[in-house]
Image 1 (tube, rainbow, N blue to C red):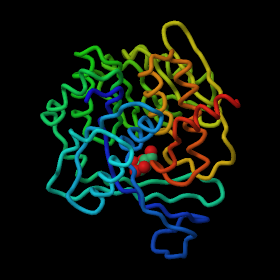
Image 2 (image 1 turned 60 degrees about the vertical axis):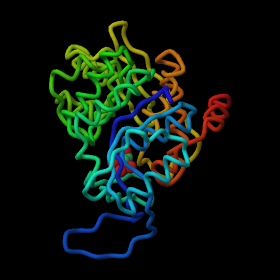
Image 3 (image 1 turned 180 degrees about the horizontal axis):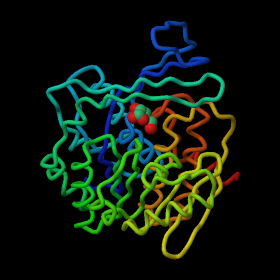
Image 4 (image 1 turned 90 degrees about the vertical axis):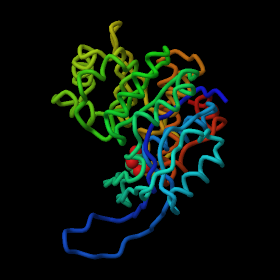
Length: 307
Ligand code: RIB
């Protein structure tokens, strides 16, 4: 089957604790709630794109264990193509997620496990799927050489590429020219440029630095301020789309990226795709969890019609 959106990325199990504060080293105290669910930035973005209505293919690697089965059950339920989800001979990874009970903010430790053993040769096996996609999406929870390989394959076939440089890391210069849409948040944008990204003007200045390095478009996600698109034509700001009170912000960036990719794959203009991504993220933060918080297409359409 040919897919609209192909996502190359991580799956890990999210082990999430809600608490009033972080423990100190050596301290044990009682938290509020606990949840285990599907996570990993790549996997979350694939779920967001699929629920937004895109035919979605995920390229990754899983262990043969309970967390790997959690991933496969998720993709079966969401109709995500898993032809190129490979089997590893090591354990699937996990993320320890601590969520501030009051503000919904988070602190995360990721141990990627099986997905991090994926090789460029395995990505080559998915070349047919990548070549026939409309949009190719990657993040930085896989080895950077594998991410660059995937972007290069997509570019070779003229597929629109989206790179979410998360978690924050520096990038090889060779990767920028392979990226049509680089989608960092403020922290990642600051890490990539060494510049402060606290205001809209600073976001524009940092985006210009990333444009000069070779990416075609920079989309800086600005949390409750929305998102900035910067390219050779100038700037375009999109306001955040609120769907209610914030319960948890974990996975909001993934919601944006998945929604943005799905909308681009439908042929929407970048500014329209950003608004769609903001609506997907706006709904996801009103719910607990990462992949489970991604909205269905009808919910996104309803919110946009009301906003
Ligand atoms: O972006 C949120 C994700 O980051 C979580 O699902 C966690 O698994 C980490 O990878």
